[in-house]
Image 1 (cartoon, rainbow, N blue to C red):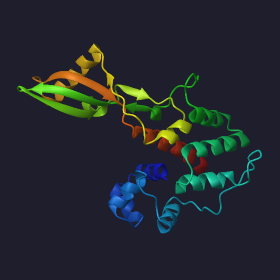
Image 2: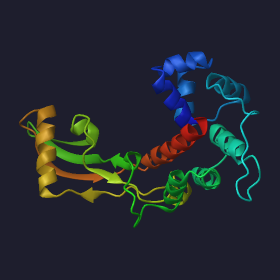
Image 3: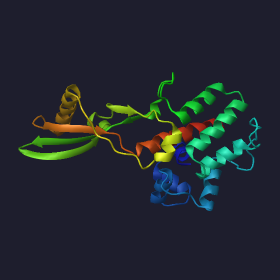
Image 4: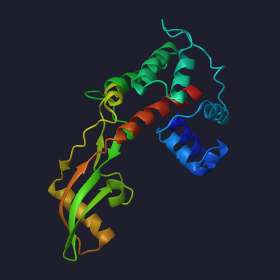
Length: 236
């Protein structure tokens, strides 16, 4: 549900406050809902379904090769209500895609679930996550520490990013208990990083040392992106 709410809000140019007013809730409550921190109440679910023009009782049903009739409805409801995992949704979606002859979506679902290791498919954009830099700097004779995302350092550019090749079956199981692993930076990256910092903080700044890591919570962004792709397909 968080993914489809965010997609609807962005497509309609609505702010967090605007969506909150439409759904008759506070702005902070809606923010928690869109981030997946909380689940909606029964009354809120009904308002959301009405807003998205979805009638849960009229989903078309498809016989999915031995799976119970109603996989379409089960899948869509499960994602909207947050009652199934991303990997379970992909498994159902693979059955559905196979049943209706959507070979490309079937292959995508299989690779997403098992992972991109050794796959001929390129990593999609939503699996590339920007790093966060941990840096020790010196300026005006004082040392201090900075902790900044790469987009902030490079003015919105997603440099020094890392790709998640792990399949959703493992991402689901390990999130949010992911280890934060720091990695050192080579000389060229250090020089480039220092130059960018000087543009922000002044030419007298010196970068002493730096390391980069991918925040564990980025895993949730990958999972939400996968859910959004499935929901968009089901809604067409």
